[in-house]
Image 1 (cartoon, rainbow, N blue to C red):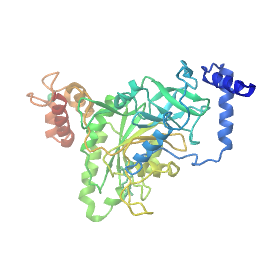
Image 2: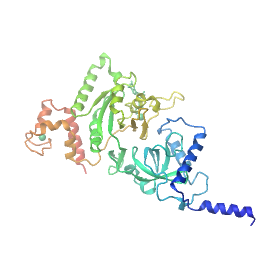
Image 3: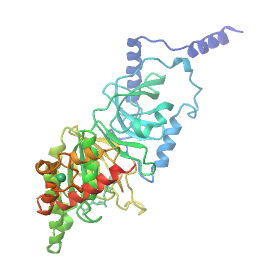
Image 4: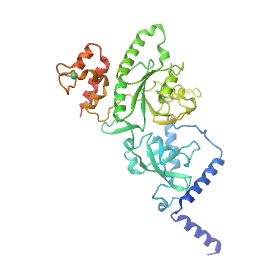
Length: 404
Ligand SMILES: Nc1nc2c(ncn2[C@@H]2O[C@H](COP(=O)(O)OP(=O)(O)O)[C@@H](O)[C@H]2O)c(=O)[nH]1
Ligand SMILES: [Mg+2]
Ligand SMILES: [Zn+2]
């Protein structure tokens, strides 16, 4: 063996050894990686946000696969070099979830692999197996780097306890809890005044789920521009009646149009500085609202794409967006139905706040307001002091809450 090949063999051995670095070395290496990255031309604008669309989803998975250590063409990493302690382990926020993988927005001063402030991390098998419940957009997670400093790949190691969460039961498997968003302050339930037709039925259920998860519900009627004509007077009355009932239930209500800009300042001011989640049926304008509140958050809107005239672009996965004033908005795909997750009849009753003022006069203290004699809540409904639609919603939800 000549000197040169000896040296090469020694270098190979050294490379295979577990990397033991001091904190300072780690820091220096990260700084180097950052400088290297900063000197590379940016391929994507700084404020690009993660958003999966029907058409783009396979592409997203492709990209994620291409980044996984098994397929990126690099030699396999030495397992022993996986640090026990998070090497880049300050908490990061999950901005997007795909199968077995997440996109993270690390706190300032951490590496990012896209130049947009985010990086991709895989989920360990135990989290991937339960990810519908255990990992959601808005979650705070810790992660480690499996490879070279500042270059990835990264892996999530744990999820921090949540301060709030919005859950629903999986539409396919009712026994499965699906967490739609975590650590949010408020949930804006968006309904459309027209196209699709005004359907306030979802609001009661979603508001209930929000309250159960310690999230404050807001209600926003969008596309208010579509019911401005003389012929729309009765439709406007129907909308206003529903809004009154939500107001009586204690939910702040907003009327907006992303076309005329009406109501946007008010909604923007109400959510400013919070982390909020937009919810509602498909096509009501959730993504449009996000876009109108901050055009730089570049949303894909469900219209025919001008460039190629091909079908609609709709949101198919939740994603977190940071507006220029720091407000964080989680855009969600449209829901058709909203299965309530493990709510008891008592909790449902307690969430209909406008019943409280009357329930004290029911003959029975634990009156369910369904069949009991001398029920003051039913009397209030009869007298028009509680909205009929809300009471009907209550009966439906209690009945479904009691199903096995
Ligand atoms: N007339 C009118 N159309 C709107 C308004 N907001 C959104 N739209 C349209 O409604 C459609 C669905 O919007 P989108 O934001 O994708 O809905 P999402 O599925 O709830 O995210 C798009 O064609 C938008 O251009 C509005 O305030 N007024
Ligand atoms: Mg959308
Ligand atoms: Zn009663």
